[in-house]
Image (cartoon, rainbow, N blue to C red; front, side):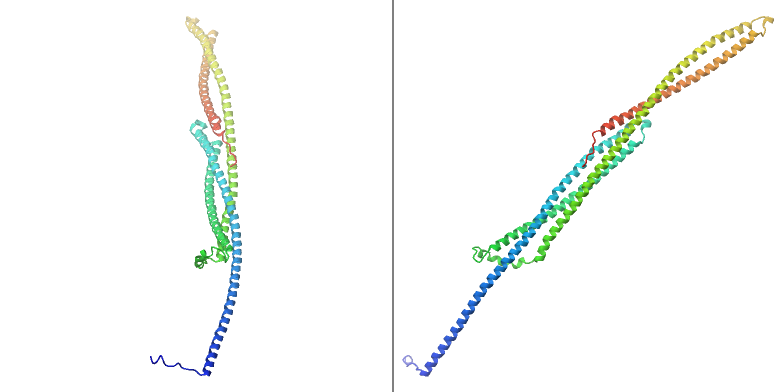
Amino acid sequence: MSRVMEPAHTFLPSEWKHANRVHFRSAETERARSERLAAECKRLIEESEKSAKRMQQDANQRLEHRIKDIKFWRQELDQKLQEVVQEIEVLITFKNRVERALESCSEPLKATLDCLNERKKKRVAIDLVSDEVERELLKEKDVIEGVITLLQRTLEQIIEQIRLNRSAKYYLEKDLRDKFQAERIDDFCSMLTSTSANVEEQIGAAQFTAGGAAVTPEEWESFSNVNISKAEKERNNSLSLRALVDSLLEQTAADMRQQHDATGTALELRIQETRTAKALLEDQLDKLLVEMANQEQNVEALKVAIADKEEPLKVAQTRLYARSQRPGIELCHDPVHTRLLSEVQELTGHIMRLKEGLAQSEMELKALTRNQLALEEEIQVKSHSLYIDEVICSQLRQPITIHNF
C-alpha cells in the first residue's frame, strides 16, 4: 500500500528530448523500411505479373507449336492409314482371285484324271499303248498339280501379308487415337486462361506432370515415324506381292491353256490316226473277204475238177483191166495199151496235183479265215479305242475352258 502511494519517477528535460528523438528515429526507420518493402513488393508484383504473362504466353506458343506437330503427324498417320486400308482391300481382292483360280483348277484336273483312268482301264490289246495322248495327259496332270501347289503357297503368302498389313493398320490407328486425344487435351490447355472458370478444378492434375515426362520429343517423333515406316514397308511388300501374284496368275493360266491345247491336239491326232488305221483294216477286211470268196470258189472248182478227172481215170482203168483179160497172144502191148497206161498215169498225176492244190487252197482259206477273225477283232479294238477317245475323253474335255485367272 505504501508502494502504491509512492510518487512517480521524474525525468529531466534532456531525457525527455532524447526519448522523443529515439522514438522519432525509430519510427522514421520503420517507415523507410516499410516504404522500401512496399516498393520491393510492388516491383515483385509487377515482375511476377510480367513473368506469369510471359511464361503463359510462351506456354501458349509452345502449345500451338505442339498442336501443329500433332496435326502434322496425324495427317501423316491418317494418310498412311488410308493407303494401308486401301492396300488391304486390294490384297483381299487378289486373295479372292487366287481362291477362284484354285477352284477353277479342280474341274480340269478331274477331267484329266478321268481321261487317264478311262484310257488305262478300258483300252485293250495292242491299243493299250503309251501314246502321245497319254504323255500329254500326264504332262497336263503335272502342270495342273504344279499350278495348284503354287497357288496354295501364294495364297498363304497373301494371307500372311494381309495379317502384317492389318498389324501395321492397328498400330497406326492406335497412334492416331493417342494423337487425337493428345491434340484434344492440348487444344483444351491452349484455351485456358487465368480467368477460366474450371482452372481450379484441374489444379490437382499438376502433380502428375512430372510423371508424364518419360518420353522425350525425339522419342515421341520417332515412335510415329517408326509406325509409318513399318506401314510403308508392309505396303511396299504388298505391292510387290500383288505384282508377283498378277504375273503368276497370268502365267499359270497361260501354261494350263497351252497344255490343254497341246493335249487336245494330241487327242485329235490320235483319233484321226485311229480312224485311219480302222479304215485301212476295214479296207483290208473287205479285200480279204473278196479273196476268201474267190478262194472258196477255187476250192469248189478244184473239187469239181478232181471229180471230173476221176471218171475218165476209172474208164481208163476199166479199159486196162478189161484188155488184161485178153487171151493168149491177144494180150499184146499194143499202142492202145500204151496209150491207156499213159492216160492212167497222166490222169492220176492230174488228180494228185489237183488234190494238192485243193489241200493248199483249203489251208489258205483257213488262213484267210484266221486273218478275217484277227482283222475283225482289231477293228473292234479300234472302234472301242475311238469310242474312248472320241466320245468319252472328248466329252470330258469339251466343257473345259481355261480362262484368265
